[in-house]
Length: 176
Image (cartoon, rainbow, N blue to C red; front, side, top):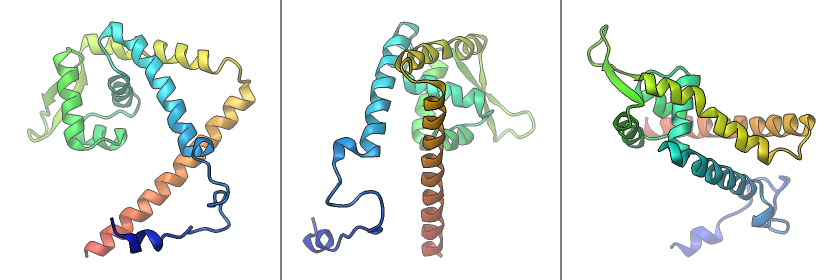
């Protein structure tokens, strides 16, 4: 590890919310989000286990349905997964009889992802598990708090996407 690189680190925005004097990992937004995500996915995983599904598979199927994805590339983009992870996920779901890969009639190079009849039932009914888990965890929140939480999380996601797009643009320019 390069000592000089470590010594050269500085806080980029000294007027930002966090500084070296007030940063506590266990109260940082990232840590709190990760803990919430961990708790929720753990409970959802336990609830999905009797149906031979995992939370990542469930989320993948919801993306397939709700984002109208029809190809592995679209699913990878929308799910924030690399193509290898997407292929492995599709392999597992296909082995379970939930999805099928079908070659496009218009363009034989394109393989579309479609839900089987069983897959349609899974996608229709499995959200009940997420709904029950979320309702259980949000039972002490009023509607305004839930709305505010969703607004703030959406704002954070927007900022993260904007930063990622800017970094991608910078990387693309560096390659030219």
